[in-house]
Image (cartoon, rainbow, N blue to C red; front, side):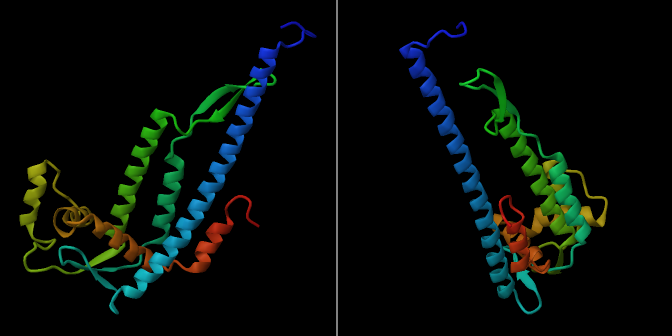
Length: 224
C-alpha cells in the first residue's frame, strides 16, 4: 500500500480485528501472570501450614512410620546442599523458546515467550523430573535416619535384598550412601505417600517458619 492511500472498509475491519485480538491477548497474559503469582503464593502458604501441622503430629522422638512399618527420624541436612540443589535447578532449567509475531499496527516483527512449545514442555518435564529425583535422593541420603525395621523386612546391612537389584538389572551399590538409597527404594518404601511423608519430615526439621514464607512471598514482583 502506497503512502497516503486510504484503507478499504474490509482493511479497516481487519486492522480493527487484529488490534482487538492483540489487546485481548495482552489482557489474557496479564491475567495469567496474576493467577500464577496468586497460585504460587497460595501454595507457599499452604505448604507452610501443612508442614506446621505435620511437625505437630510427629512423635516426641521425631519419628514417623512408613507404609512398610520402617521407622525413620529426621537428621539435620547440610544447608549448603539444599542451596546447591536450588542453584543447580536454576542453572539447568531450560529456557522458554521465543515465538515471532507481527505488530498489527506497524507491521514490524517482535518476539514473545512461547511456554506452550511442545519440545520445550517435554524438556521442562524431564528436567523437573530429574531434579525431583535428586531432591528426593538428597533427603533420603542426608535428611533421614533409620530407627527400626520390622522383623519381616531385610535391614540395610543384609545382602539378601540386593537380589531385587540384580533382577531388574541395576548395579549393586558400592558406597554406604548409595546402599541406603537403594534399600529405601527396594525395601522400605512401598507407597507413593511415603515420599510425601519423608519430604514433610525433612522440611519440618529444617525449621520452615511463617516468617520465612512471608519473606518468600514478599520477594515476588510488585510486592513492597
